[in-house]
Length: 494
Image (cartoon, rainbow, N blue to C red; front, side, top):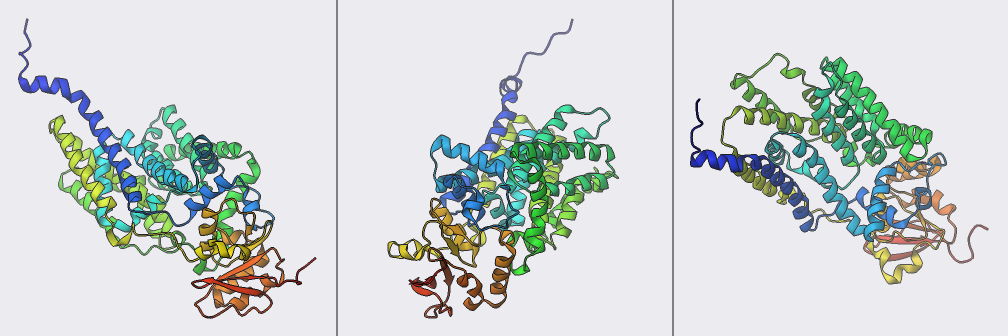
């Protein structure tokens, strides 16, 4: 009867340590993706817009109609799940607006990266894919640090990108279907753009994967219905979230669109990286006829093309699909190699350190972004009389004012005329806002001034020493270019 050879020092070492190496690599990769946002926030970076108003809304405890002047047919919070989750953190920890923003940035960045790091057999492949992004498109990393709930949708997309093959086999994988449905439900509950999952479904169908496309459509549909049920306003949630893009984009002057809704001007370096990986596959003799029919590649290409309409198609849909595709390509190459297990830890450490350095250095001033301080004179003690009184309205044709003041004064007793989405304004006020954007003069705001009550205020930012040419109001220069106007004593509507 043959006997086993006595263990050598190498086989004994491998027998003791090899089982723990994959776990150590995974923990190292997760640690890297935790360090990255902490280091970025350590530079003083803070998201400039939506993360601020989400935190302030939770702390205020108010509904949007109590915070903003809105169209009469806007009745549903478009982010009910996100505000529920932030509210839970707020109540459990007592965190204020600033702390909630920091928590949102770290948590959302980590959750986007945790899905591939926990799912891939080689988590270091995701680190390598992320490193490529850091090198090829440094500014785009800012989008992953904004602490906004669209990153929940990104997480759901990454989940679908990793699971779709398990839904393409003849026998249904119920676990994959359940995870896909849960991911979409969380995304739709926290972020209103659930209809954009049609992009991924279309990519799967374009790849000829009809079985997977059908099953994914059922999962997405079920997830959206679950989200609508969780919102507590089933029909209104579905209707208003589907109508939202038409209000935001369809009725707005292109100059009012935020950067993510404007055309993509990013150099095509990521596309060059994809072509490089395809060439690398061919050079290794691993080319297959179906390589270019991968839904992730199709979505990446479609996202880039549609990015010329809106950057968001690339940054939120095409780019994440490209990152997952690249990680899967790198993982396949890593598994072709017969390197010893313990070397994985060294490789992961080197790549991880490179990711930290490449992600957190202030390349092109990406982390030097600070909150706009234009309207801070309004918060000075001597400006108290030039802010709205309780129940009043703060008129201002600048969304920056809303983000600055609401973040710092979530308990204020007034409403804002212009908030995070001007397209949600009442039609007559939207017309005033659009006219101001066209002409840029204070005179265009006269319709607002004419309906102001004594408790209201109209704030504009002008280059000093010019004052607003609206003599119907009493004006005060508060500092910088900020002016606040109010109805003179003795004038006002009953």
